Amino acid sequence: EVQLVESGGDLVQSGGSLRLSCAASGFTFSRHAMYWVRPAPGKGLEIVSVISTDGGSTYYADSVKGRFTISRDNSKNTLYLQMGSLRAEDTAMYYCTRDDGGGPFDHWGQGTLVTVSS
Amino acid sequence: EIVLTQSPDFQSVTPKEEVTITCRASQSIHSSLHWYQQKPEQSPKLLIKYASQSISGIPSRFSGSGSGTDFTLTINSLEAEDAATYYCHQSSSVPQTFGQGTKVEIK
Image 1 (cartoon, one colour):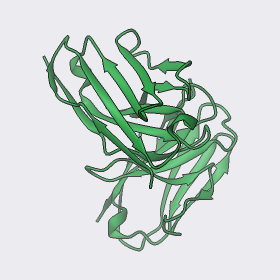
Image 2 (spheres, chains in turn green, orange):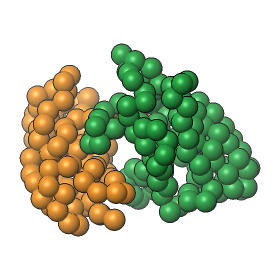
Image 3 (cartoon, chains in turn orange, red):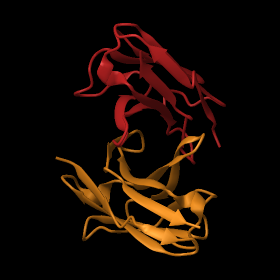
Image 4 (tube, one colour):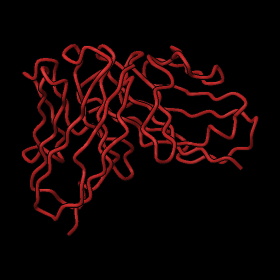
């Protein structure tokens, strides 16, 4: 059974840092690009960051570029999101998900809540 | 960036009614359009992939259609458990994007 389990969410002050983790199991982690997704008020869901199978290619939404860093450890089947210079507008549930061969997101974690206080 | 616009934003429906949600893309995305259901306090769940392909374990009352720029999610004979927000998502080009969501409420 495919499982994605996020952790690391917390209450943090504006300007602070946080590292999210997503532990994967039940599939060959190294064969899937991985994503962090969050709700964006009035815009639905926002893809925050993406990382390729080997970690060699990454994407960041403009809203987090220069502040967040995505990484993965294929030996530990774990995805990470290092969040820095946090702002109130980063407050959200952060979901880890994988794509099904470059298409739909077929499995999602339960989410981890990040709250940034100003 | 491809913009996906869903309509309506909100729909209040009685059980057993049919629900239709549309998703319009700002440029052609062929059939690279997927639909998700998100209930309160839960993560999104994939309902339909590539515009019209069904997903194992999803009730047959959910169906999708369309190609190019115009897509539709149909829920036949709505059930109370279908109260949720529905999102479309395109994987045709980077960055991948979502629609703004359609909230379906049960009367």
